[in-house]
Length: 244
Ligand code: TYD
Image 1 (cartoon, rainbow, N blue to C red):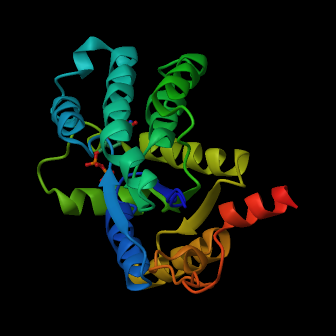
Image 2: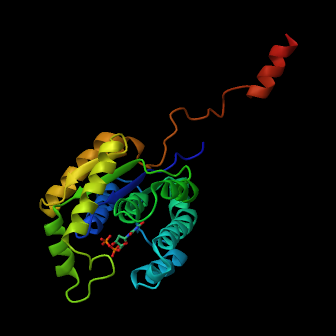
Image 3: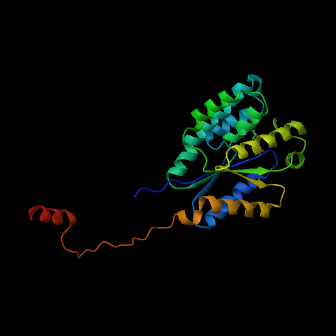
């Protein structure tokens, strides 16, 4: 019997929301319950996409303009899906991804530079049918996120972290709007809580929506063992029937 497709969970949110830590903790929780789980991230997550990530975050792509930048995120996503996400899902693994296409909607879209129709088209092309089963929006007030992001990389903010507070407020609103618009896919968690509390909240949502226990990849026991001494094989039995 073909193995069931794995589950695809994305974590989204502004800067310093603690997504990376939560992605790791979620994967550990899944593994502790017998599920295969991988953690991956965007931009990046496959060797070629990691190269694109370097180019974007170093500021090499920005001079090409916001549309080209959105296309670079989409190109990285295509490769990431083809080489990391889809193969993992196909073998039944859980994929926990730190940022995905909602980040493009929020950063390239809601921050006001790239036309939403263009972004939707790019999303259709890059993501296709591989939409997340669940998106966790890790929400923190912009000032907390910004302070955390700055503490993480003192003196060396990357291109996106260098933006001001208004940028972070807009970003937060963008993610909350995405969650409100697609409540069946998205859930918001309070990222201002302590690490363990956030992890527990995330686990409750995952259990509630995706029931990992029920899909655990345990070795399948045969419920009805084939009986070697069970008389005529089906084909012969059919033949016998046909003869009658
Ligand atoms: P990263 O260091 O991974 O940031 P974080 O820890 O906050 O996730 O850098 C990724 C940056 O790229 C982040 O500022 C968000 C931005 N980004 C986009 O602008 N568009 C996208 O589609 C993605 C995936 C990320």
